[in-house]
Image (cartoon, rainbow, N blue to C red; front, side, top):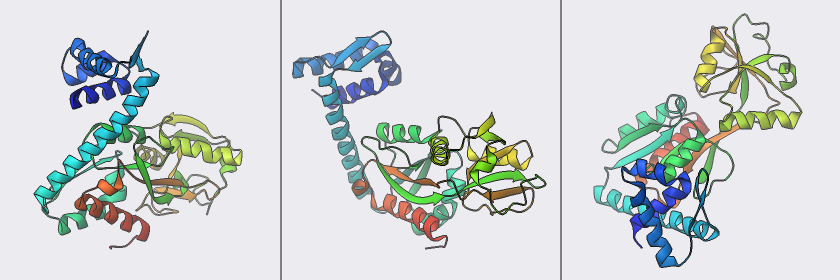
Length: 299
């Protein structure tokens, strides 16, 4: 049994397909199968069950996959810490973010971090959703991910940083633009721009509406918060979005943001594999972002 055997087996369990893992590893499906067969010979049990659309782990396979995932993550983190110790004050902090995260949540912290840690590289990887951030953390050498907090995810620790109130974004001149605030129930007959239906933020919004017995109607779907704000500013539609840092509420100019205080705020923050295994530069960057978002001032 080798580390490669375990890595390949975990990848197969996650992908549900031998061929998909073979493509990712640029090898043959037979080579992937040999890794699994070697584990089955050594454990003496069947680890995968073939189904019409791929494979799933057997009960024994789930036990091994859980243990192997945890062990591989711990080993990778240890190796990363050793490299960081060898690099001293240099090294790299790798962060997974959404398309608009750095501009709205991290820009001030990035400037301060670069001034304080000039030898440490910052790398940002854009992901399309919190789910994709979780997968990236599990499958790569990323350190941190900025996410909308959701349900617990095995092998991932979620750390809340700030709660964002919801607002209605409309163009100046809209009949609702001069309202000081709105109750969510007042929007039931209003057609809205929809956040990505599969996103964690959309799920939070749906849950907040369900708490109030409110149901919104949508006629347009967008990929991110900034696009929703742009369409609202252009007068193409109205959007319920989080009040992002740096945006003026109720707003001036062409875009107006009307608070929706009855909706439960949206929690956002960090996701990591293990906080106690983060390198000193990574913790320093995470704490800087937290300080700016919680205090709104330069720490």
